[in-house]
Image (tube, rainbow, N blue to C red):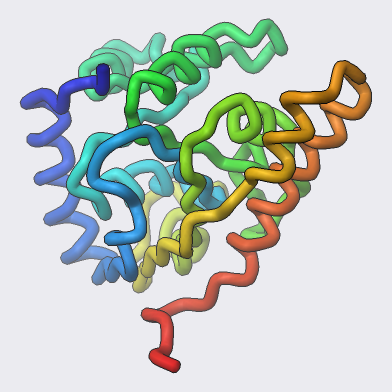
Length: 219
């Protein structure tokens, strides 16, 4: 069953929303494209430390994310992340944490992933990593692309403190991976599976890149 949103998450989201709306003049477009319940994968670009917070604050429902195991060693921050149901993941390739993450998705949670795998140092889009493709193709959950605009200028890797730069978040239309999922289910070829995982991640990132700021224009 889905993870229940707790008081710590509600309080943290409330306080961060105030800060983000005042300091960054945060604007959110088409958050209604994320289902209010049921499993869903949210895939976003990654240009700032604050990207996960921007996305969590843009939605009413709880979003489950990942963070490096090393971050949880910080006494205050680690406790906060645990209380917000963030999952520690090992970046050494053991896959620790991903099983829990996938279990949460199958249980009906909204999960957040970054196809690039790490924050961009330059603000430019990085090459997609196949890990997100594996999660996509192993599940049947809808995939919602998200693009964060202005977060690199507001608080990129080169900034020590956040700057009051305007930030927008736009949620795209849910994507259909039915064909890739069907082929991944059929194939027994490990090399082909890796290609399919990479293709899914590439397709998602392509859509994220093509999202434009502001609400969609009526046709």
